[in-house]
Length: 248
Image 1 (tube, rainbow, N blue to C red):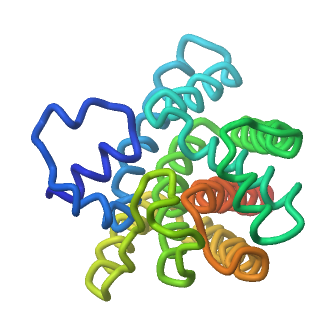
Image 2 (tube, helix red, strand yellow):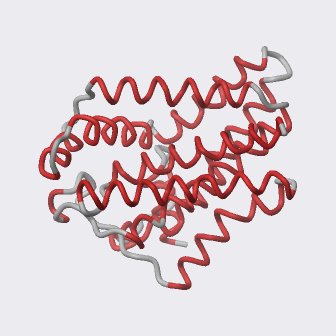
Image 3 (spheres, rainbow, N blue to C red):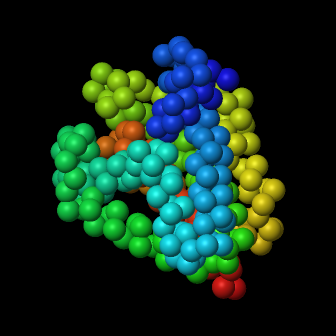
């Protein structure tokens, strides 16, 4: 429970720290429970989309739903995506890529990447019926966080621990922790998605594999920004899959 609480503190801006003090060692295992934080962020998005769609145009309800996660997380993952795009877009070697990603300023690649990401995300959600959009917001958030969490199992950390933004390195998952994380990521997929739509879960896995290869080739590891970017890109591919299957 301490690690789950630490994950909620780390991945959101909600005042979970008021509940109890958590040992600092727990924060090294927060990725194990990242998918469970998706129960909160995805659930809030789905709820806001559902409620606001009754009194507002559907596109506006989609924007409100997306904004809710930005407020809850403090745009943590979006910041990671912007840094990732800047680093891998503008860097020519490992040292330069890592230096760019650590820079707090956003560059052209980051701005363009975020614009394209949100355009795709908004457009694909607007093409779905309300009940389908609500389901995939919850299921996609959780599943994509589980997929992205496996970065720590496939790659080493690319920096020294003292050079990391969070001043720590995540611990790799044990077999038990992997199945705990898988349950957090896959439960809503199994419960909510019709069998046909479950095929969309394979696209995030493919995107994850491509990103792992890219990170190993370019920086021989991962960073916190890479984790955030991987989550958002896996989630985006999930929505691509859902839209394709819906139209078929």
